[in-house]
Image (tube, rainbow, N blue to C red; front, side, top):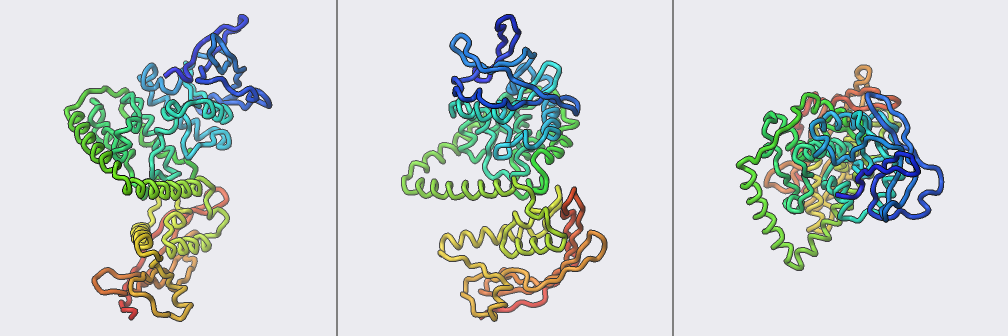
Length: 456
């Protein structure tokens, strides 16, 4: 790929290096102060400055002082023997450099910003150059540097860890896991690394394949929204610390079978996509889902919403999220790796209500406290009564608070409108991070069903 290729030039006796651009940049780009980049190595970094934009032999270049420099894609080619240490150095650079400089895009870093130098240091270009490249790069080329790293249903705090696992996959195989259109059409089922990596340990191959396929709840267990994507790279650095490198490739027997089955699934998918009314429905639904996911990512990239709250207020926010089936609000203050024991029940009921709302044209969920405040009026037969009816919070020890709550939930079974009252005693243990609190542990001390009754 010719775009962003590095070429050396000598201009008026001065040795320069240049990044080749696909199109001529706009004339006004040279106006104003040039934003600096940074070169990072072994825990320290220094500023880097580009020189100028120039046209040489009818080709456009971004020029700077001569360097032994390699574009990011070299990790799958020239730099492959040392790709893993280079990627680990890159991860540490992102953790060290100012967050305002990194300025991730949808939780990702565009790979046209990343270059490796001959001494194994990493150069990261400034955001202003990235925006220039975005403006002048055709979509089919841009996809290799950004778009193909975007996978649906990635949790914002985990997105960078996922991208670095894609980097590792790329360095091993020479291909991006989602670069093939068939993979994207096949519900993002990538070619398992276990089928091509000859000398990887079984658990190492399983780690790459499982990381690329983690569900949202599993991602939230690894990466907390209370931390930035760069901070959450600590997990990826830990997992890759003893990883086998270099990796030898072989054409395993299972590759042909995998490709054959994938071709069949894609063919079926393309066949059904040709059905006119159905595809219109799917497209509209897809746009709604993408809008909804984008909204969630936007919110999660912002600082934790609980940053200015006390522990009691954080627990109250947790309760509010639980009552509204808002898993994101419930997890806003969770420290990395902290499990929310009520996530599954809340997310399951959320899906149920949204499906019924779509088909029945009304929201069946009724907030328990609001229902009681209104005098326990009669409810429709298909309604779902849910939430913390009454609760109290007390501090039992430093940074530990006990929530005692009377909880109402629809009980499974064939009987309609069967409600179960449950008394729950739950301990929330906090820890202080900088100037705010994070939930370090949620422990159910007691959970006692009190009674079940019909509402008719």
